[in-house]
Image: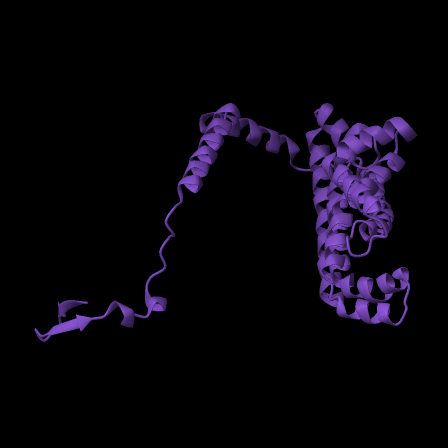
Length: 280
């Protein structure tokens, strides 16, 4: 204990054990040597990446006039080919819708196999997890190139690419959701002699259904944006229209396509949010 002088001039004895430590200001914990070394290494890695990517504010500032010139050529948008653009936009949404639907169905089956508590075999569990990781690792544009080689140009290749990409996105989240459901109803059904499929579709899937719906709606939004890019490699949709317009320096027509894509994505996102509010 150490004495302190109060405002009246009398000495007051302060006992540290009587101090409420919850009232003390929050302080940063002392940095451990390993954490300090890792922090310095991470900062050095970032600085090296910053240098190697040639980030330059000067180059950015010098490029602003060129961007303004491009925007000046894009406006006002041209409606000369609004008919073919609208048809391609509809095709883009149809690719996203069909690919997502088939992908969700496959994701549920693969997600069950990739759930440790529900899979019938550890071998199937490992294979399912490996397949999901592969589908997530390879970008959808690469899948589109593969399917263009396989089935030819057109929206079918893009639909297959979206389906595979949806499986990689949804199957993992489906499996995690099924792992986290309450085990009580499953044990009760098991005690009554229910089969594995009966337990899955009567206890596990209904409990995880809100998470399934949320993931499915997000995957549809993601697929709508992805389907635009797939047209760049000939996999159908409006992407090829945008590429041709940019290659031919038809910037006013390109701006029309970009605005149409923006409207489609916005409508899908708003519809998805409305459905989530109504269902969840």
